[in-house]
Image (cartoon, rainbow, N blue to C red; front, top):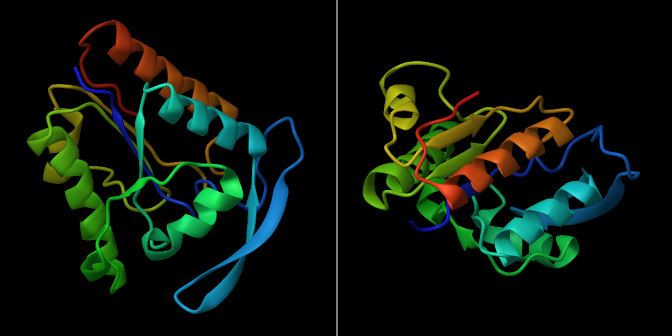
Length: 177
């Protein structure tokens, strides 16, 4: 089975006000859509994400309004160039962005038939037919909605790692939170 796809949002997931990891957060600025924004992140989290991607346990993909300018984030965070799940057409209105992210997630589980980890603070449906489709993905799906001020916590990173380990060892069913 192909490695799980990990769809990553940035703001509220990686770029957060108070990352709760052991090492002190790091700060920088980056620009997208003609505006410069402050960034704050947990370096230990980025180390884990980078490791999962580089060792082939997961394929990281950007699913964020930063897609157009994600190369800045990749350089800043020491990530290799990652695929973008959203095209420029998806980056219009808030609804277009939400449906672009949802369509990217559904494509992973229904067209690529791959396990999915989707981490987003505001785009993952809580219920309804789209959520049912994701929850019933044959290859499995882990859907995490972190608190936007904290982003991915150590505990959530442990859940992701456990999901990746399960997919590496066997073809298990869906796991959602």
